Length: 94
Image 1 (cartoon, helix red, strand yellow):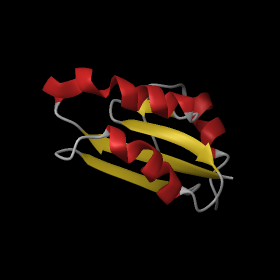
Image 2: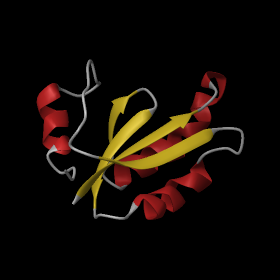
Image 3: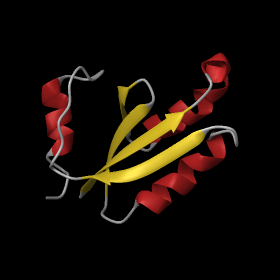
């Protein structure tokens, strides 16, 4: 398994238009860890597949990044507990 970080920049005035994105992220098992960042445990080499599942829900003017996270990670003040994120991180590859 691998840990993926999904990041996006959206215009705050348009946030109401992203309910479908957030719903889809929850449906695929992602957990919101920061305002515009989600973490997802998935099979290795799935970044592109994750991207294609959510990219249609992001507007052309916005940005989107899906990347694998390794065990070499440091965090502070996430929206989930340190224990919960450490549980996610344990799925990351070395």
